[in-house]
Image (cartoon, rainbow, N blue to C red; front, side, top):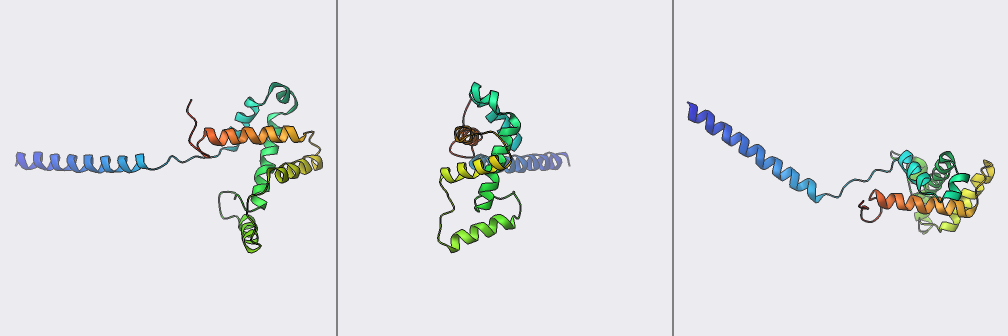
Length: 152
């Protein structure tokens, strides 16, 4: 009777060990998921701004610029709110129907953000916007959302 219990225990442990090894190997083969965290991005950008821009742009200003960028991407069918987003899907379908590429030039994006800033009476210029957008691209690289994940 005891040898049957020992044999059963060994078989169960062996099966669990093989299953764990297989799942671990599968997970190692998958790329890591990158999650864009707006608050983390704003903090990263605000910390990396040149000193003279840190005196001009508050973290709230950086947050607003990034939100305008995300809204621009959404309205141009390039991004969603992370769930079913009818507005973004509609914009993407319209671009495809017109045979246009979804990617717009950075100048269009900067102009759009500057128009929003003027409407909201936020004192920023094109250089401020371009620096914030470049630092956001650095954040995307740092989390591995674009290109290889940065190592520190």
